[in-house]
Length: 429
Image 1: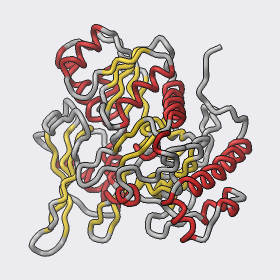
Image 2: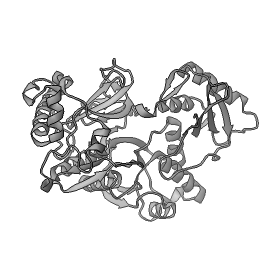
Image 3: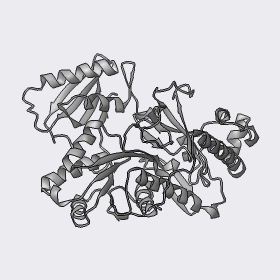
Image 4: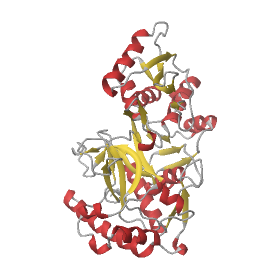
């Protein structure tokens, strides 16, 4: 019998019971093991004995990224240092990094969750998984590789960039799965076609992580490589790393591992639950994390819960794709704009390609202006682009309720990236 990494619960009732037991354990563990959490709970007037139902989650204080930075180098530590077997760090570029500690059990849980992602994507042990993400203190490379090895497929850890080696291994190793950012996937798809090696490779699936991608971009990548399927993976260093959820082959939402963490979707201003289907900030509480448990951790990621069960039949709940971050939200003339909304608008216009830039300027009149610079689809004549510009401006005005200007450039004109693409340029003083 093939091993499964799915939770062994039969229905949502059992899942909720499991969450409550995990929540009780986490609060007691953090209260007794962490001076930080003990102080937080004391100030909030709550003890482990107060947690009697999942509704009592609302009694608990929030944890933030600043708490992790202020607790440097080993924040939230809830076990003796001798029990820590590894650390990983966030990819922040300024100041102190957020460092997270792991016990041996934490790593086991993480790799099982990541193996679950591969299982949900329909991989088998016959697959060859080419991993094109960063290694080192970042969680990405280690997560993808060790999760793959836990699952039982062949890992090909090439790392990021290095297009020459990526193409060579796609041909020589006949990799069937490619793991990377969306920008790297587009770069590789175009490179494979440029080199004329599409018929020499055996790539069937791509798993995308670390970067938001539009449906237009995913459609372009899938078409250029002739893929069977593509999947979005979620995760963050604070919550083990990548591998915290994946959309299944039905692509109706991202299944998240509710047996390992509780997900709340809250209004980032009021920190109260949003209505069903509304966008809010993801707040997570771990259920079995030992070294650095999270209690109502504000991720700053924006999404919405999907209340309808997935037609695939899996009982694990879903949230929508990540729309952006609450601290990356653009405010233009009093209108809140999430980067994911721009993706959705441009993806709805057939003539617009997958790459774009968003430029914000403040003119001499003191007003803010937004210009969307977008590539045309491959094969589109850009000599007369007025119709495409008007489609963009009208769609943005209708769906986001703000005015913008538009510029259209030829397919391939905007830069490609082996890592995350920079698409937002805020030049307002």
